[in-house]
Image 1 (cartoon, rainbow over the protein chains, first blue to last red):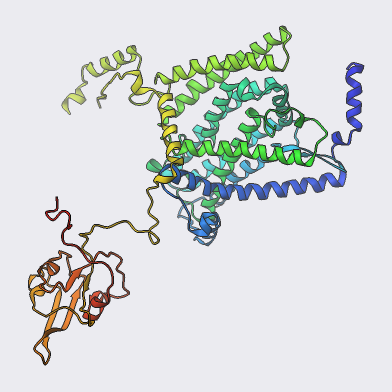
Image 2 (cartoon, rainbow over the protein chains, first blue to last red; image 1 turned 180 degrees about the vertical axis):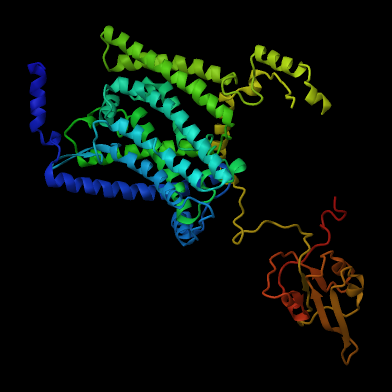
Length: 428
Length: 166
């Protein structure tokens, strides 16, 4: 490191804005952050159930819950009801696993939150407090590892229930989540390529300087969003609980608070997925159109503003989750699988190569992070999106039942239909 | 088993997914913000309008002096196809007939409205009313006092502006 680089670094070291808190204050602040996050998160998830019901009602020209405290106390009433209800334990369940499953599905979604930064750092007299519970250097890898644990809760619930619907739901869920996890992980590699680091704070900082990743990496964002929908088992990917086919899927046999825990887990993972989309592609807590919020001196107001900005971004994605849920019908199982394996995964892989090549080219041309890079990457993405959506729109890739087929495929099917019947069929 | 699949080759406009998706999303968001056109009727507070020819539970109209208009002519129990009206006629000192007992079993009633149609005094009416609940089956046998106490609007057998029901 040259001297010109070392002097600012040294100056930063003595700046109280840049010295992290240590010792006892660090411990107390961490406990405080945990308590605040947990409280806000749980209340938020409860309110989300209300939001979902309200939004679904509005979309369907209804009013939604408006009786218990004008509707605002509906989550509390639901919670009370779930506490009061009978805990059923069907015959033949594997009891320890049956009890463990809801917990297992709920904890990963909650745990992922401990590495997501939710605001600009706050300068206190004890030093700088980062608004993240644990600023892990491997932040993003931690999230990938933890969120993929969510599938265990669902699979175990399906298996331990001793119920065919639950088992089918669990099986579907395992196939679905394992399939889309790959695309999800692959779609985030370009993000890491751009940031040059897996810590979420550095990804946010890179976006504050180098433009939001939704412009730089639009295709990756779309892949990530589709995969996130599949990971959270939300429509149009809610095959694990497909009401019309599987009663309630993996939680058919659950009642009372155990059922409620699955419900909470679904919303919790929705919040986590929304927070990840905001962090990875929409600049996290970065206040739009400003650059000064990412360096010191930090003020309380600035941090508060950034927290609200982050919340607004999360709420936007949560709304998109609900909006899509109440618009699109469920995919068929083969469509789900072909979309995951035949479209999203190859697309993500090609995109990684493309972005890596473009970045290498830009580096060779001497264009670093900044307006030029954003413009070049953005225009590449616009072209890609037009081409991709055009291809999707032909109806061949997602292949609905009435989908447009290749002439060769049609000819093959017609030949099949014309083929001479075998003896058994003729006699019948 | 032979696969019998109808193979159709539809035009791109019919099978497009992305366009259809955006169209659907646009439709739902339009409905979401269309606050003035909610289909819900907040029932106990607001009620759906009912037809002027609605035939609900009965009501006996009264004279200015507060007596039942019924003259116990016996037409309504005669015409009643469900045989749900029980009428015992009486006569006062001046020779005016009045009902000693007038009971309608609302469970037997089929709400055809013949009683209202046949009544020469326009005394018995079927009502424009649909909220009936009782704690016992006996509660649904309405006696004369109960019928006179009802205040709900009564059925117009035909719409005055459209007497032929067109």
